[in-house]
Amino acid sequence: MPGVRYGPDIADDAAYVMNNLVDINRRYRETGKMPKEFDKFAKLANKVFGVKPSDLKKGKYGDLAKLATYSAAGRDTRGRAYKRGKLAKSWRTGKIMKRGLRQEFQKRGETPSGRAKSGVRRTKGGDIIAGIPGVETQGRGGGTYLGRTKTKQFDRLAEAAYARAKRNKIIKTPNAAGIDKLNIARQGKFLPGITTDFGATSSRTGQTIRPPKSKTAAAGARAKTKAAVKSAGKGGKNSTTRQPKAPAKPKRPKKS
Image (cartoon, rainbow, N blue to C red; front, side):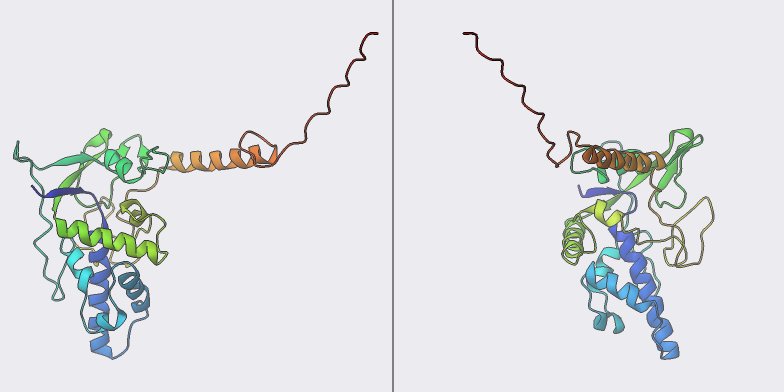
């Protein structure tokens, strides 16, 4: 049975970058002038997906196109949808596989210490999940990601992209969490197939398809940093500054 992937990932980022580049190449052929956005997307295509700018101008997309085939938003150079981003079904029940949105981003957002952050903002009405592809709304309880199939080729391409992005200093950690932090893919006409409660925008600078970061988690992280700095300044247990030793008590004279 092939592996399963949940929620937005590097395939959606690849589809977004490629869809933009295909459009840029179309405008270049029509006008003879290279749109100013080319450099931005060419850099991502090269530094993350390993495609040379010279190949992009020729309409050759290499690993970028291969990864885009796994996205529901993936389109070829003629605008036709790829067929590889299939929903994954359980071999035991025959039902579509699912994973809680909160659980998935805990798995992808673990810190080196092993403490997971949800990465999902929670309100009285449940988790905010607008703009995220493949999500089923579960009301007050939040949302659920629908599983999609992946192959050994997907894992190979994704791992190569993580390592390349780390090597080129685009991300700090060579994994899915590192790519998530880039927030490359934005909803809109260059990421077709994305549904949102707020309505899709045609802007290239629309909202990210990743869940918004938790305000409480961010505030907690800032508070911990502030406390650590304060502790270091006062010579607390986390301080690296040596404190002066207390003066030694005078010795009592020996009785004669």
